[in-house]
Length: 143
Image 1 (cartoon, rainbow, N blue to C red):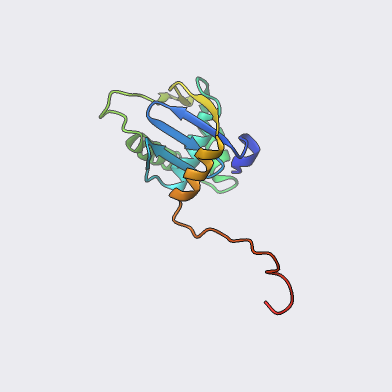
Image 2 (cartoon, one colour):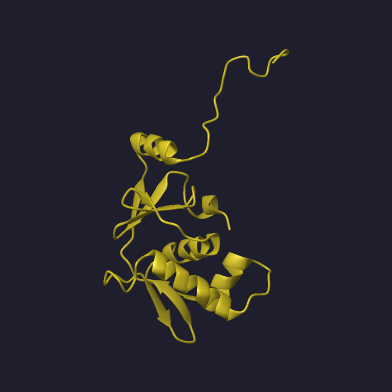
């Protein structure tokens, strides 16, 4: 799944206490990164792209797993992990609805924001990856 095909590189999706950066594949609760598996994050991305709509189980599986044959139980396991990561049940907030025999939908209110330059800088600083430095003449012979 490619986040860049659905959302711009500077898009931030905010819902409840969460901010989702699809292009960076990062979910924050306030300022704290949320630990979540990549499949659960993919499912969130599919659901949050169409808030208020019920998306069929087969469609979600096709988007998240592609051509890989996957049992429906795998989808349910990752939905449960996503719900836990979002704190459903503990806080009274609800983000993911299940319509039996049909699919799942994102029921939270989603606000689309554009990242400001200072937000982009702060998010870069939150990363634990080294910053790539660009130095004049780096590609010149002798380096």
